[in-house]
Image 1: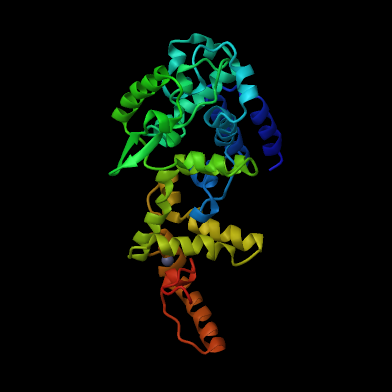
Image 2 (image 1 turned 135 degrees about the vertical axis):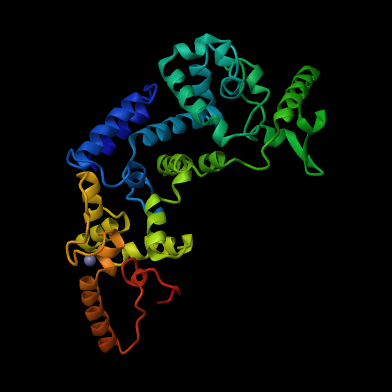
Length: 356
Ligand SMILES: [Zn+2]
């Protein structure tokens, strides 16, 4: 996709899009282009899903934009680039973490008057509750109460806390290395408030992504955001339809085998396309056609006796069965083996045992 690198350059350098309306419009245009202006046969969320979950890995612009936002937010969270942050936040009343965690942008309106700061914060707020439900260990409680222009070199909760009998507790003043009592009481007060929300038990997934360095950061963040948004897309509607047709429950393991191995067994584009079409049930059956045209009937056009459902058109119809049996016979003769006459073994290459 030639568009993506160009868009990514813009997303990474000018993160100024607020709201999701513009992405919705882009999505509509893309879908129109993909399906040539006709009705979509595969749901958009299945198109953008990763290949290991049976998706087609179409890049989603909104999630890429949000991933680019998070690569900026990395600086605010980790506070490594101190020189730049001091410069960027010279007119801020509170530390960066006060805006990220305590919503101080509501008190200090100056923060949102900056076009980049305000759109980055909007993205952060969209995900904050979901990805950090509890007080994260990367939070710097003392930085939040100081002006960024004065100092941002203070410790994280990870450095300040110690686990006692399964509970997080604050270290002593000397162990913390705090010179004055004032900071110590500030920290105590802060700890009390954050303990009411609860602390994360370990490093959050987001922090682990940041810790792995800048190389490949954008793709790691994109995958993270995609997984977060498509968590409920694990079970696709087509999977339920297939299970109903085969009359048995198909385990997630079997589907995973199909997506990871079955779809990759050939490099031929036409074969792979056919497999995707088969899995997503994109072929229009007589039954569906009758529904679309709101007419009576919908009988199979080969035997003209039964309803032309998907499973009937590809397996149960007596004329189609003749064709399948010829194939079984050929394979049995060549390989000198006995095959089971089950449809799911052949269409989807779903094995009962992984070695078949
Ligand atoms: Zn038939």
